[in-house]
Image 1 (tube, helix red, strand yellow):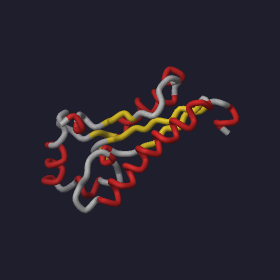
Image 2 (cartoon, one colour):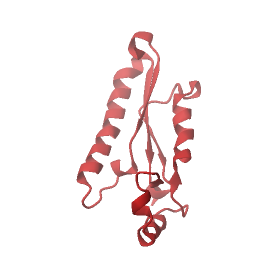
Image 3 (cartoon, one colour):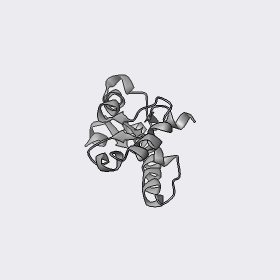
Length: 123
């Protein structure tokens, strides 16, 4: 439908794990890396048709899915220690870049990713 209309916004959600390898997480890191390349390839293919394709790559975000593992104080402290901003993100931290990519103001942005990671990738 987007191609037929010559307009659209595709926003993929990946993870900073698309850039960072981790022991015992080859399956996860590989799938996130694939989302990164999918975003870039789709951006090239769809740009002439008015469709932008971008991704948001969260770092450590506190969610219901990881609530149990983050309840371990030692594990939680280790996660926070690797984040320059000194805290885990929350789901609301991911919303602004998604809204930006969906907006008219992002009409000339395609094939890129925005990290929402408290500075973790800057290290």
